[in-house]
Image (cartoon, rainbow, N blue to C red; front, side, top):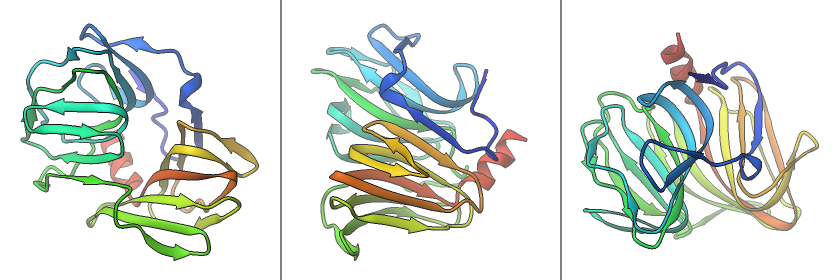
Length: 222
């Protein structure tokens, strides 16, 4: 299966408008955003766990990165409330589930094979002012990518032209980018050398953003 697998194209998906599709595990549904492969795939998805649902124990051969969007994600290592950012690199394993239900944004099989940095962070803690009406936290940075959490006050703008492409997920509020509306759950991917200029509406906005990684994704695609 291939979905939004051309990393040279701009993609904007209002994920909350997509229908939920059942996964092989009962009670776990997903909205697919990009994908190369079948059940074992390089994939970006929004995944919903019904109360009491869980996946069987498994090892992340290609790594896993996720944000808890609502509810509490759980595994044998602890509880992860909404607003938590998690990196589980290759060779890590767990048995994920959600006693009360939860929704996560997750990226699979997109790590450096040698990456062994595992951690969790509260994205909303320890924010630093980085511009007029703009605050954020650096979540992760390495030679392949930079991952941040950004908050915009009403009317504030965030603009940059990073090397290696841009990917972002709107977590709350609303904004515009190239005159297109980005509501809660909007997923935007911009190719290499494409500038990003996002402006919050009078609601303000928060989003997760990753930059620099698309050349590595394209190499995997090839």
